[in-house]
Length: 110
Length: 111
Image (cartoon, rainbow over all chains, first blue to last red; front, top):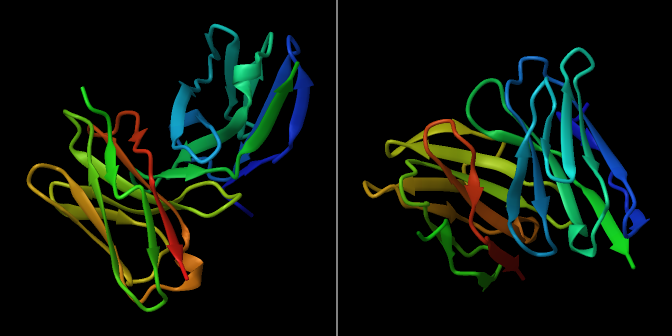
């Protein structure tokens, strides 16, 4: 079983739509959780950290369910500029490195 | 304030050759990690350097080695290149265990 699993998509949505991405992780000892955004042929950029209490940053809401080992990202009022690959990231419990999912591709269309 | 910088941005090498990639961390960061990202995949952890020592290593062969210098910059060396080593190599820096920031990457093509 992979350490971090995501639906690769692609998700094609119209502008203004709400879209949700999900991710599961295998190691219950993981302590840090993130969503990164990666544009085509560019480096990953931190979008937001994820906490059990849930956290929101503008149109983006992230949620962590430790019992189910499940992480989600909700994007409201999608913009064309949200088109990118969204990477679910979980720390490796044995040290300091990060485990990345394969990413979920989002295309927002006019 | 410069972010994480990597050089070169692109590189073409022949099978069997050796390559060195370089990374300068973000100002104030003391930890450098290297990742390999193959096409269509998420980044895979290679190793991490802290205080000039390899602190943790991923599942990569010994052909992959690295170094961290006193100014916290780092190098990734790959020996005996294989076609399968073609990928985007990403350097990430952080301070202690805080959030990691990535450089723009080096795109390595092995022919």
